[in-house]
Image: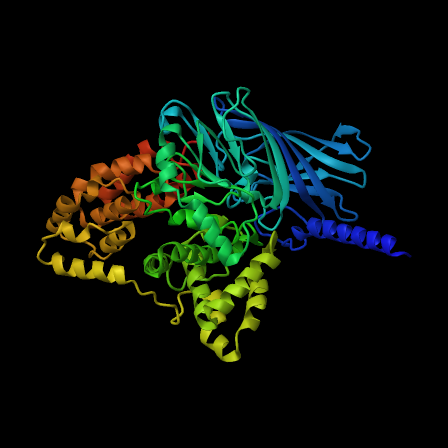
Length: 626
């Protein structure tokens, strides 16, 4: 064989090898036995999703077709999709010879958490599956906002939230974090609105109301996202920008101006950004979370638009998910800490690089406070305070607590401090690179990380105690914040005298104020609450982080002058982080319980279904069926 032929053969082999590796890379680590999916990916697994859907704001439904390409294992007789609250009108199959015909599908028994399995027959000749369907007006992933519930009060809005297992309520799909696929979509919306997805996006409206999307990187179903509304776009850099209601656009751009710098700092730490663009969509205030890390398009709450860039740490968090979570994904929701613990760690490293160690240690200190509050709320011995969870038979949303985020963070920080930052960073950069577009479970991660440490170091870390046992180990790292120490001194000096010098707080940021307020006794005497409010105007604050902690302190102290502002806050803001502590605090007394129920009557319609379900449970509220 001559050199030219040999060289060509080598190139051809490498090309085939790379192609096969690319095809396998996002499927080879599929989690068998995901307790939150009916799918059997080891028999038949989705590889590409193609959507052709239309939104109907009057009926509050999405209707259309999902075309599914899949990989079939030998002798597999069916492919199983996850559905919930969907109406399946029909299923068709395109044979490999291009003929197309209807098939008889089967729906399994309804499960209150998981929904209903959709069984579709397949054989050697099956090429592609076409599912014609429509959603329910009560679909858990979808929130349909009336014009009155949006910023401009003129146009309606639709937003989705697929995490953890809500993708199945608006798309028939294999809805497990361990299954990755690429997708494209055609979405028809009212011509006055623009559609945006976790994919390549338009930057302006068109006259037809028809938008086309493509996501070429494989993602799990929980990262499928759609929002439809009256949004404008403003670039921040060549690869990032912000979408928002037109009247908020410049304000949002100012707040998020350092996003490109954050991306560069993240890349310096752990490798190149893998998703081409990083854009941010600022949603109406009913969005249930601070942010959602949808690839290419972070969904974010408007409560971070504080006017002073003090709350953009949330963007650092969602950006960090582009590596931890989106790139390397927990294989099941029992390993959720691998997504969030890594992301909090990465977030604080970005903020340290951006603002300095003193700043990041403030954030870490607040995380430790949040962790202790979560441990108190859940109970120190609760199995839900372990990093490795057992959520079988339960909604995985129950695992979305500060344990995954903050206990996960401190476990990783302990590893960094034990090994040394330089070696730790080398490991993490390799970890993200070698496991890109794959899934990871706790045991596989521990197998990778354990060899980094000596036996003496491992005995000090106590991995078993951190991962598999409840509570917080004694060797938890202890952050030190100079700025918080100054706030503590200020509080101690002025609290007893009840005289407050506003000049001493002029340079305080949001994080210092939150720490200061958390340090007040519960309850705080009413005369001191009134004095604080008179000097610092907490009840009139427009900063959601400060509002939330002040209203909680007001409820604990019975400071009624704050209640009207709290009522407005709870009616306008749907972020679950703020709602839950306030409703939980109100129901501690009969008077508070009556107030909570009265507020909720008005506020509930403004909340996303995910927040509604959480508050319903706290108030034992039973909504009427749709």
